[in-house]
Structures are given as C-alpha cells and as structure tokens.
Length: 466
Image 1 (spheres, rainbow, N blue to C red):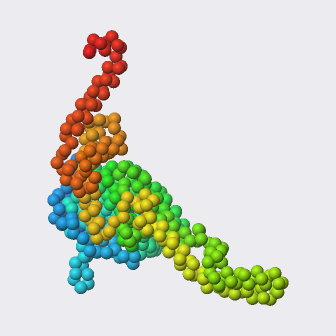
Image 2 (spheres, one colour):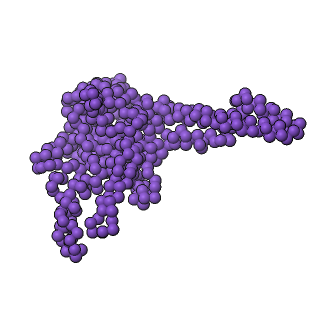
Image 3 (spheres, rainbow, N blue to C red):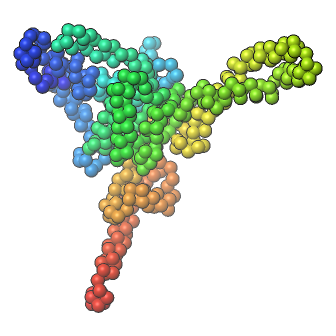
C-alpha cells in the first residue's frame, strides 16, 4: 500500500451522509496506512509506484515458478560457513538483529542468521509480539517466524463516529502469544505453504499464550488452534529452533511440537536454551512442596536431626516447656533452610529443561551451537529439499506409496550408497544418481499392475494372453 493510497469500502462522504453529520474528513481515516498496517491488511508500505513494483519483484524472488516446484536456489553470496556473531541473550533484544545482523554503538558489525541483506519483514505493524518475514540462507529462500522479547503496545484508535470512544493502548509482554500475534503466526504459515512452498524456520522463544479475560474473549484459543491446523497442512520442511537464552513453555510447545506433522517438522535447541511445560519454580511448587522439603531437611540436616532427638527425649520426659522451646528452634532452622532447599530444587528442575535432557528424551532432534547454526541449517534444509524432490519423483512413478513410504525407500537407497550426513547427501543427490533406480521402480510398478490386471481375468482368457 502506498502512503497516500487508502483502501476503503465506502467513501468518507457517503458515510457522512449515512450518519447525518460530518464525522470523517478524509479517506485516510478509513483505510490509510495508519489503519491498514496495524490491522494486518497491508503487508508492506511503499512511498510510490516504483518502490511498490520493486517490493513485488523482491517477493517474487522467493516464489517458485509453479506451485509444484521448490523455490529457486541461487549460489550463496554470503559464505554459509561464516559464524553468526550476534548473540541473543536472556534480556530483551530486537529479534531482527538475530535474523539480519546489526551494528554495535562502536561501529562493529555483528552478523545475523540469514544472508546479508536478504531478510525482509512483512506485516510489521500487526501482532507486534511476533516477527515474520522471508530471508535467504546460503541462497535458499525460507520463511521465518521469530519472537519479540521486548514489551510492545497495541493501539486501538478511537472511532470518530462515537464521541465517547477513546484510543486504547494495550501493553503486550514479550515471549507471549496474544490473539493478534497468534493469528499473524497462523496466517504467515499458510502464506509460506500455499503456492510458495517455502521451507520454514521458527525461532521458538515463547513462554505461552496470554490467557486474560479480554484475550480469551478475542479468541486466542481459536487462533492458537489455527497454528496447529496450518502446520498439519505444511508440505515443505519445517524447522523449530529454540535460540540461545530462549525457552519454550506451556501451550506454546504444544502448538509447534514436531508430532503435529512428523514427516515435515524437526525440532532443535541451542545448548544454552531451555524447554519444558512448566518453568522450574512451577515444577518445584507441584513436585516438591513445603511438607516434602521439611521431610528432606529433617533427613539430611545434622542440626535438625539433633533437635528431633532432643524433642523425642523431652516428649518422653513430659517436660512441656522444654519441648515447646525445641519446636521453636526446629521452626527457626526450617525457615533458615527453606530458601536454600528451594534454590537447589529449582536448579535440579532446571536440569530437566536443558538441551541434553531434551535430546535424551527424544523431544528434539539435536542440540546446536548458535554460532555454527547457520552452516548446519544450510546443509539440512538443502538436504531436505533435494530429498523431497526425489521423493516426489518416487511417488510420481508409484502413486500407491505414501509420503512416509517414499521417505523410507529413499533412505534405504542412500544407506546402500553409504551416505548418512547432510553434506554428503547434498553432494550426492546433486549428481542425480537415482535415475536407474527410478527406471527400475517404474518397471516393477508396471509389472505389478500387469499382474493385478491378469489376476482379474478368467483363467481361460489369461492363458490366451500369455
């Protein structure tokens, strides 16, 4: 949308006549960028037609020639082996710096995940707690969804037709899905999948969904379910990656878990990330309550064990005042130890949320180091795309095979060839090595079809044909 090009349903003059008074003074009040950007209608604002055509051409550079093809893969202009030098932290930061890099106040350059200058954000003014866009990784076009870690404001303008209405400013915390950002996420996933066939990477750093009365009223549950629906339908590789300092918790894990679409989705976590349904303090509150903490104190602490023995002796000697004094000492000691035991319990619970444990339980595929993540994902996404191309050829030859069966067949062919890592598989598949096997598969399928047709004929007719 151009800055001076409003999108409207009814002109302001007609609305003024309908209302019987002069409420609106321009079309911009109804459909200007200040309205259409925050509501998610306008993907990008441009100043003139030349910039608009350029924006369209930029978008087309990520789109395949036909809906049946993969996106165009170009030679990388930015070395895939370079490190990602911008380091995400546990403190709030701009996620765009993680994707495209930034410059330090001293003038130093910090590189991002995608090729330099290729990341383009869309829908920036809508659902600000989520960042969506397209970028290129080693020349491979990808869709990307990242999480805003800073607090943002959602502004709802006053309605000129209602004199009593006022502008509403709603603060939105970082790392949380709100109704608008959940809808934005689902919309982006559908856009990347429908016709664009883009591989998708989700930098998952959510602590959960907002659950206040207003958010529930504004259908946050429905939009969260739409994220699941969009991922179920996704036909290209999807990578979920918990970045360094990030965490994935609660319902936010549920809606992007790889079991939603195991044929396409894979989950990874940085070695400095965390993941789990509850955060450590919540786990401790449920699994290691005050009574259990006191029981452990009395079992381990020498001073409490000594006081317990003294209490037992005083109880048997029936000296009430002495027993009461000992109980007071026990209570004082328990209060002194409680913060220490709680801290130790939280640290123990945190061990369950770390990358090694997630990998051991099978909820992630592999733990990664952020600095080398760019190179890893380049070979992984290229391997998945080349494999997808061969799998499509297999299913074209034998339509009876499911996607999973075609994947297993290709895996067996690669195993026979001794190719087991992404880089060697990419180099191998770029040489189109399975032309003979595909031809042989076609012959086998034809034989099977002929056999099935013959079995349907009466035996007398069958003998005549043979």
